[in-house]
Length: 363
Image (cartoon, rainbow, N blue to C red; front, side, top):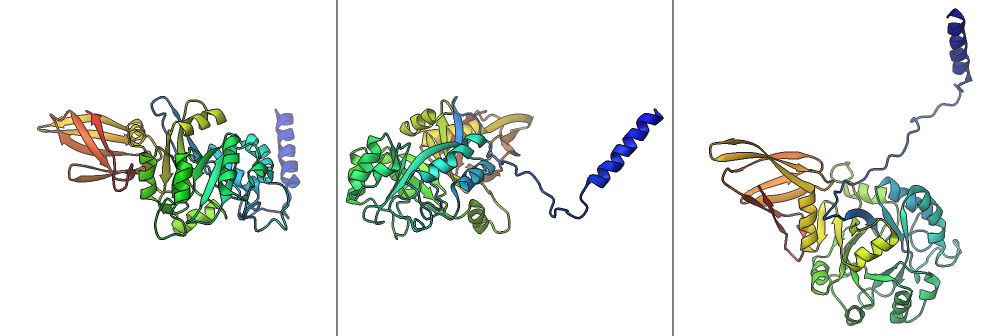
């Protein structure tokens, strides 16, 4: 026993002296933890957290492609598209390579971290006349570089791309569809639309998504870092810190599964505590997230515990009473004892201009 104790003491003594006391790290190094928005399964679908519109130094972004991947992983994304501009590349004198370079550089790290990386690009023309469009699931961005904007979009479509109309009211004083934009929607070249971009919500575009059967997107369109963007909105660290993202309801977590969901318009746009999209998916997400449990009765009143299983805060009214149900929390509500159903007007969900879904739950 004494021999064993002596060996332990000598080992500890040598271990202490093995440390380099002349090199110490302040602050102490720590792991970067991935923070995910909690989302339930909805009607049997898995909900993926996606950003289909980001930029790097290979167009007008300020970060390297691998940074975008690491950032996406830390901030809880499942799917990322790097969509560098074809026509606008202010750093091309210093950053060479063909139009697929940012994707190729990011892909190995995306595979290592388990981020699904979608090959994409942005076709960029004058805003308010032609506009900007993201082409997702392309094969080769170089073949999309064509002078005629419709031919460029047709080239992307011919590669099997899913094309969305970006930020319809950015840099304008109104949200509009030009003759060109309406024409390519009518021809089926464009099948999606951003109802949220960076820090702008477009209620009119949300109405178009329903009227013209377009898939809804919320995108960061990040050029610098998402940390800079989030801190600009929440400088004191309060409020939700999740980046804007498109919630995609997939049958399987594959690129084919994501594409099938986009084609089927099974998406919602999440942005800073709000959710926008088709009414049926808003209701389904709420019902999958929120659970009611009766806890007691007293006279004509019944007490219920309402629990939010998701990472989305919900704001709603029941009659004249207003409630806020924080992410991952529970509240207490009181209802008439003979009530068999409760209807909630969910104010931070949007399915049309100025319209919010009414969700009913059986008691």
